[in-house]
Amino acid sequence: MLKRLAITAGALAIATVPAFAHLDPGHNGSFLAGASHPLFGLDHIVVMVAVGLWAATIGGRAVWVVPASFVGAMAVGYLLALGGVALPFVEPVVLASVVALGLLIAAAVRVPPAIGGVLVGLFAVFHGHAHGGELGLASALPFGLGFALSTALLHSAGIGLGLLLGSGVGLREGVGKVVARVLGGVAAVLGVALAFAS
Image (cartoon, rainbow, N blue to C red; front, side, top):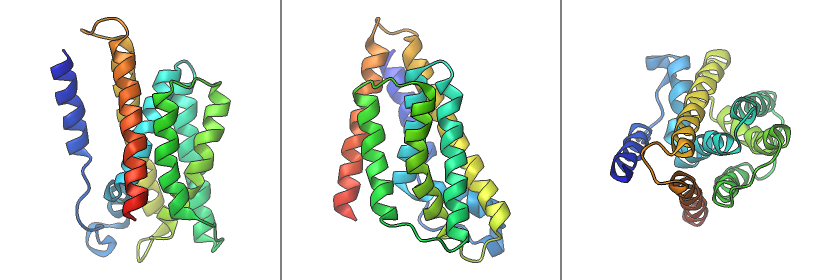
């Protein structure tokens, strides 16, 4: 079963591998440019999947509160960028979010859903601001709707993975939770590596 789980996780990772350039909104449309935008940065992919995974490991209302908080706060960050409001340290905070979310998963930190929503929301404002800073020639509303949808789908992938691991289907008791914690550790290490690479 671990082999099947590894293959499934690998397939999810491959499905979200970024392309080499952002889609041109003039050719592909602003919505598709926005929907593909989060897929062009490994940091964005890892954080968005990690948000869903962490929400699933917390369980209960957190499964929808935490991802919804991320998407909502990301929209606020996007609007701040569109309004010309500068935020300090956008890219460092985005990279820090990879490490932080990974550590929360690795340490199996469980908090009330509202607190989890606030934690991810703080990071999400910076992610949204980063997207807004790269709007280019795209139309703001369809671009924003596109990356919000893409973000929600990446959260859903993380939730699905977390629920699968939490249910322990075909695994010895507790193994799924260990695998989730290991994935969190991998995300944290990846965040550190990305920070040093940038």
